[in-house]
Image (tube, helix red, strand yellow):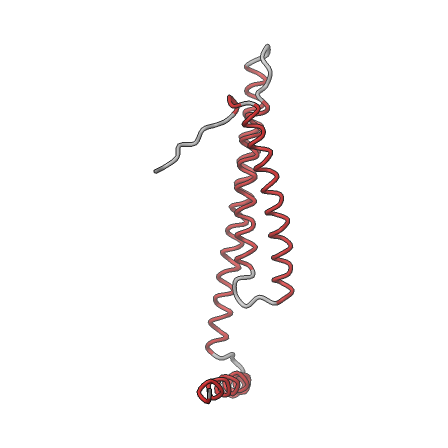
Length: 157
């Protein structure tokens, strides 16, 4: 038990002395704080990259959907446009984008989050998970109604 209190006392002393150490050394921050800031900056850049990927996924899905719609509209004047197939394809892409967006939000709060950031992440996670659940449910229902609209993806073993 004495070792535990000695360790707590040592850690308390180190953290209390860190700002003084920083001021004595030209006002810079201690090495542990600098590493934390670097790690936080890296995770923020990674989150921005993932958010860019989310935007790209959505843009590509919308362009593919519009392209399919117009090709079918022009080519098959007597046949209906396969809107279920287009909706399913767009829905799958949106579900993927939601998963990536949640990952980006987690990255933003990965290093030294505040309670406020944790609360915001929890609210965003609940909303996005709910959206994704209902989107997936709608996709399954649509695939059950029209199996011909399903685009099969090869599964790797």
